[in-house]
Length: 276
Ligand SMILES: Nc1ncnc2c1ncn2[C@@H]1O[C@H](COP(=O)(O)OP(=O)(O)OP(=O)(O)O)[C@@H](O)[C@H]1O
Image 1 (tube, rainbow, N blue to C red):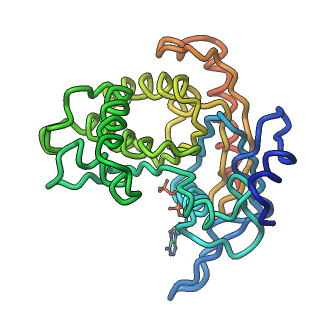
Image 2 (image 1 turned 60 degrees about the horizontal axis):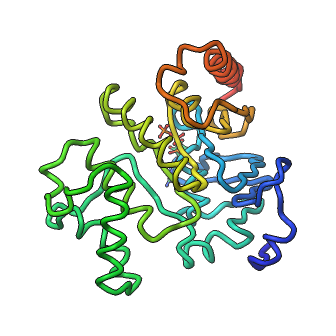
Image 3 (image 1 turned 30 degrees about the vertical axis):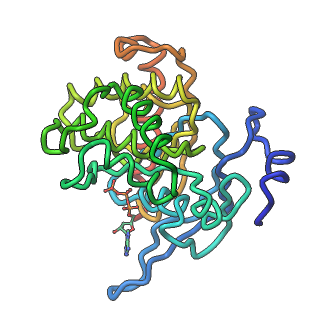
């Protein structure tokens, strides 16, 4: 399954003609626990192309995080294959192919905002002047210019999450993995960050994989929505979302938006009949 990057670029294209970033075939994952096996993922086939914004949505425990962690090489599948940019997840991780944003901002409380963002750059041995340039650039990108010297506790939850997004972007990964990054925030902050994220995506054109429980959030942000079934997590449906690129929150009241939201809701409802 492992291919060189050149092979991947030459051969692997999605149906829409995009370069393939993530390709999973018949992926499964069974956790062996003291209470017996837990079938977290089964028969997952998924292709994610360059510049797509793909959301995983499904009921709690359906394997969204597990699938994201397999992409990130934080879990090993027990069956099937997966490649990231034509490489194994472990090769992709070594090449820093992705940035990961968790549900909690996970900032080091004793480091200032800029020193939190600097950390992966320090580990990579990026010289100080270049680190400074990138920190300024990415702080501006997440609308936190001038906040570099603040400590994490001096920022709101939404601002802390924006710092963690800047940290995930600062080494310029192809792929941004976001696991319910706004799940713990109030709805007003979440709406605001959704708008900022869609603008950030338009500016950076990163490939984004996003886990959420929220149908409006998935429809607002995504170019594709992957609807998953209760355990074992399977892909029930992949829904295309072709809303205009420069969307604002009021798009949520349009018939096009509501039609996609309805399709996602129906997909989730159908999935609940699955025998758990
Ligand atoms: N390390 C592990 N060992 C055993 N079981 C696990 C492990 N990690 C996850 N699971 C189980 O695998 C299933 C899928 O979990 P996962 O966290 O991927 O679901 P999820 O869809 O992200 O859930 P949520 O929306 O609640 O975050 C769950 O039943 C969970 O209990």
